[in-house]
Length: 220
Image (cartoon, rainbow, N blue to C red; front, side):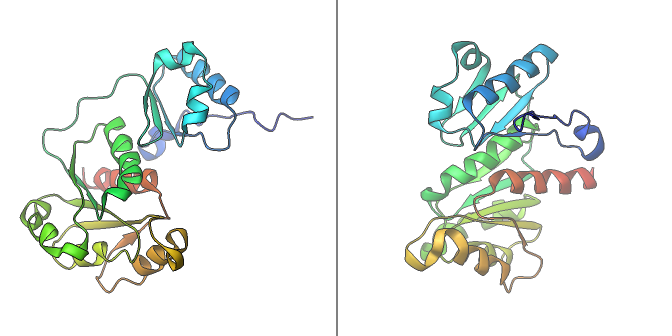
């Protein structure tokens, strides 16, 4: 019987599309994650692991913990050195509230792993619009904005109506009742009246970061 947990790593992905394959740890067993890391160590290559929760991390043997840089907020782990970032940020991470920090941190770590400097502007949701308006001039100067918002997810539309450049909306699962785990935020972002807003899936900080990298790759 075939081993359903065998991982066939896409080692040539970076040469094709400019992005390395990351390991999505959620639903993988701790033993499988350890085996993947051991393989990467043996091949002397870098590795980004996403959605590695605290239980999976705590279950890792000491040899794995010693070689990984684990960040609990973003639930990511990195094998190898982080590259030196660019001098001037080309990407901004904008969050509506501090409850969006977990998803935003996943995006930030993904960007930093790929060598991009990031400007982080937190807690500027439209319930207090003055907080966002304080940063409009700075955001206008940054080509790509990743905007994280739950509840009604109004922030991406408002920001896209104020500044130029690419706006990538990341609906988050923050909210009460009919927010429905981020579905209301997703529908709101998809229904934006601001032209040209790009939308990724709920809580997909990694995907938003990769979208930004692809845009910059085409511009370079």
